[in-house]
Structures are given as C-alpha cells and as structure tokens.
Amino acid sequence: MIKLFFKINLPILLIAAGLYGCVNLKTINVFSSTALESTRKFEDLEYSFKQNCLDNCHNKSITDLTLDPQICDCKANEKADSITLVIYQAIKGYFDGLAKLSDNKLTSYKTDPLSKPLAAFKYGSFSLDKTHVEAYSIISGILLRAFTDKYRGQKLKEFIIAGNDPIKTLIGFLDFNLSANLVGKLNVQIQVNKEIYFDLTKDATLSTYDKRKAVEEYYQLNDKIERRQNELLTYSKTLKKLAEGHQTLVDNIGKMGTDEFKEMVISYASYIQNLNSEFNKVANK
Amino acid sequence: MEKLTAEQVNELANHFLAMAEDLEAYREKNFATLLDKQNKQIKDLHQLILKFSDDFYTLSAILAFDEVQSSLSLIEELKIKMKITLQTLQDIQKVINIAGSVVTLGNAIVKIDPKAIAEALISLKDAIGI
Image 1 (tube, one colour):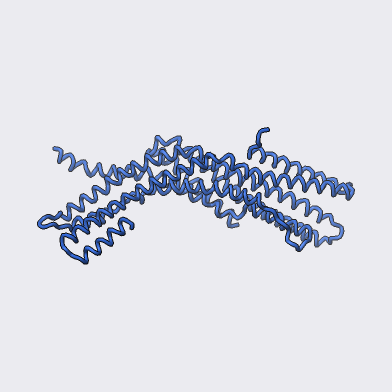
Image 2 (spheres, rainbow over the protein chains, first blue to last red):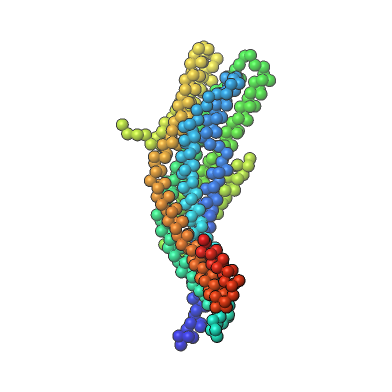
C-alpha cells in the first residue's frame, strides 16, 4: 500500500516540490534583476557635481576673457559626488544580493560529480546499479533543490522586509541628491547664462550678426543643460518607482507564490523596464 | 541652534535661486532706465545670490550623508548576511563535488591504480579548493 502510494504520488510530490520554489523566486528575481539594471543607469549619467563645478569655472574664464586657467576649488562638489556614490553603491549591492539569491541557477546543483563515481564504484563483488544511482541522483537533486529553494525563499523574505525602510531611505536620498540638488545647480547655470547673454544682446559694440550668434549659442547651451536635467529627472522617475515597487513587495509578501503577487510585481518590473528604455532614449539624444 | 537638514538647505537654495531670477527679471525689464552703476550693482548682487544658491545645493548633497548613516549601516549588514547565505548555498555544490572526488579516490585505491590515485587526489584537491 505504502509502496503504491509512493509509486503514484512521489513523482507528483517531486514535481510540486521542484516547481514551488522556482516559481516563487522567479518573480522576486525578475523584480530584483530589473531593479539592479535600473539602479546601474547611474553609471551612464554623464553629469556630476564636480563636472558642474568645472563647467562653472570654464564658463567664468570665457566670460572674463582670460586664458589663464581659473583656480577651481571643487572639493565640496567632489565630496557631494563621493557621498552620492556611496549611497548608490549600497543600493546596487542590495539589489545585486537579492538578484543573486533569487536566481534559480544558484540551486541548480549538478549531482553528476557524485553519481558518476558512485555508479563506477566496485569493491570486490559489491557494486551499485547504474540505473539506480542515476534515479536516486535525480530524486536527490529535486529534493535538494526543493529544500534549498524553501530556505532561499525564507531568507529572501527576511532580507526584503528588513531592507525595506533603509533601502527606501537610500533610494530617496540618491534621488534627492540628483533630482533636487544637481538639477538645482543646473538651474543656477541657466540663470548665470541668462545674465551673460542678455548683456551681449544689449552690447552696443557688437554687430547684429554677433548678437544673433550669441543668442544662438545661448539656446544651444540651454538645450545642453536641459538635456542633462532630463536625464537626471528620468533616472529620478525610475528611482521613485523602484522604492514604490519594493514597498509593494513587502506589503504583499504574504501572497508570495500567488498569481496576484506575480502580476503585481511583474507590472512594476515592466514599468521600470519602460523607464529604462526612456532613459536610454534621453541619454542617447 | 539646531542643525539644518539636507531638505531645509535645499529649500534655502531654491529660495535664493528664485530671488536671483526675480532680480534678473527686474534688471532686464528696467535695463533702459538703469544707470551703468545700478546695473552693475544688481548684476553683482545677482551673481552673489546665485553663488549662494549653488553652494547650498552642494551643501545639501553633503548633509544627506548624516541622514543616511543608519540606513547605510543596515544595508551593509544585510549585504553581509546575503553574502553568507549565498556562500552557504554555493557550498552545497562544493560538498557534492568533494564527496564525488572522495568516491573516485576510494575507487582508485581499491583498484590499486597509482595513476588513477594521483589523478583522484588532484581532483579532490581542486574540489576542496586548496
């Protein structure tokens, strides 16, 4: 009877055990991998606090008509960059950890290194049947995976819940430094240019042609600044969605494994993917 | 006196920028009637206010560090825990590999095959990672 029970139910149990972990963790993996990819867009940002400081010095040299390089003190801006970088590294490390832990490849153990020598093992008249060894190897592989996936699932839940508040704070401050402070500095640059180019249009010593050239240059400069702001603001949208997605993950962690959970998380991942494409478009302009 | 937060300093930077914008708008609107001296005074003030605004934005970004310290420590702790979990799960494959190498070595010893023993020892060494 017991034998019959196992004969009928064991394959079902094994398949169920194997699938349970895979499906659950795949959703988390899709979200964390997308989050990691999006966070990494930071490295594609072509602007920084230090670059802004250097640009200001450069612009001042042009306005003052001086060929001597300006003494450019950008220490504070370098510090602002390094702080922003530390925050970015922490966020990247967190999502990298989640993505690696939720990757199903992690627990796709190869049992061949043990089953092959076992099948070949002979001691006097004692030897193991090759087909039995292979069958046990498959079963043990599936069970091993089921247990380790359950362990991974529990650990991931713990990490996601414990990481929610600090990761949201860090994402918030990375966003703040880029979209509120660096974008603010670019607004200052727009205002500086406005003053310089207004005076050029009123300069009686310049010809109308020179004035037109100055106006053209002014619009080109503004376009460049606005492009940089756009890039930063698009990245900011991604960061906001990322924090929102993480909160949704925590709020619904009890539903992990359900279709509702899967749909919710995947929709965040797709939205973030779209923002990544938007960022790529803005960055390549 | 309480220390200003990163958000408060950012607000201050925004106010200074708005002030500078208003001042420049006034200068442009009244450019024809302003004396050269007045024009220069407004420009100097405009540049000074913009410099303050720019410095405040930088300062705000620096002050953010004070406010993320505890979050940074918590995430660092989690990263270490994740690394340990990852290592534990990766070690399972290592254990399977070691067990396989031990069986291969046992097989070679039973057969008294010196070449196979030497090869099995190398494979065991690799599996253990020494």
